[in-house]
Image (cartoon, rainbow, N blue to C red; front, side):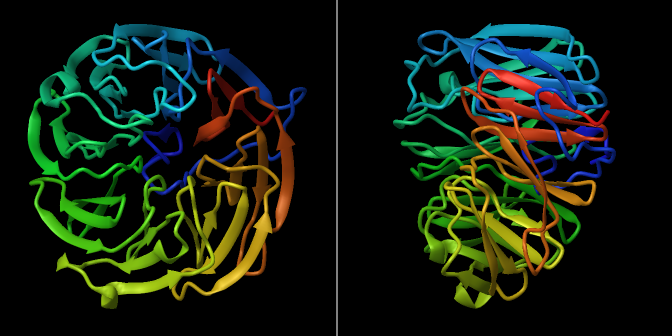
Length: 390
C-alpha cells in the first residue's frame, strides 16, 4: 500500500509499511500528536486512508450499539461518527470479544464487521452504502469468547471468515452491491485468526490458518486450492507470506512452520520447508524481515529464526506482554507491548539491536496499530493515540 494508507489488519496483511518520517522516541510530553476517546470499547486495529483514520467500537451491557468513527489524521478531529443497533446481542464480559474485527478500507468505502454479525459499508463521508446481518441470514455466532477474524479484501470483494462453535463459512462479498459472490461452508472450527489475501501465479489467493489446518482458496471463484492438516492450536495468529513461503504461528511449538507456496490438493510434510520446536506464538503474527522471521509469545519473548531453514538465531525478552503484531516501517521494527511500552529496534541475524523504549501506560490494553508517513496510530481499548515526529 502507498505510504499514506494502512487499509486493513496488519496493513495489507504482512505488517510492512512504506511510511517514512516516523518518530523513534515519544512520551506523554513529546511527539504525542493527539489522543481521542472512542465511544465504548474495541479490540480492532485502526485503518487509515489518505489522512482519514477509521475505528470501530461497541457500547451497551449486551454490546447492542455499534460505533464507527472517522478522525482527521493530523488534528484528531472527528469528521463523522455513526452508530447502529446490533443484531445478535451477547452479554458484555471480560471473556467475550468486543469489536474485535479490524475493518478494511479502499478508495470508495469502509467495510466493518461486528461480533453481532452486522456487516456495514460506509463511504468516506459516512453515508451508508449497504448493510447486512450475517447472523440473521446464517444463524447466531456460537462460542464462549465470540468471534475475532478481521476482514480481508481484494479489489472487488470483502473476504469474511467465520470459524466458531458451530459450522462456519467463508464469504466473498461484492463491495458495490453487498451481495455474495460465493459462499463456502466450513466444519465447526473455533478460531480467531484472520485470512490473508496474497498474489500467487497471477491470481488472488486467500490463505487461512485456523485450528488444525492451513488452507488456500482461489479468491475469484472460492475454489479450494490446497490444504495442510495436522496442526495444533493455530487459533489466533494469522499467516505471513513471502514470494516462496507461508509462515504459520501457533501456541503449539511444532505447528510453527514454513510452508512452500504453490501446492495443490492435500499437502504432506514434504511440502513443509521447516518446523520450529522452540518458538510458540500465541497472539502476534509472524514478522518476516529480510532473512529472518520473528515469533513473539504472549509473555513478550521474541525469537528470531532463519527464514529459509527455521534454525534458531536468538531470543530476546521485550519486557512487556505482546498481543499486537509488530510492524516494519522506515527501516525499523515497532514492537507494541500490551501495557503501552513500544520498543523500536533494528533486528537482524545477530540480535534485536534495540534503539528506543517508549512508555505510554494504558489502563486497558494495546491491541494494534496503524502506520503511515508522519504518524503512528495506536489502538487501546477505548482510545486512539497518534504519535508523530516533531
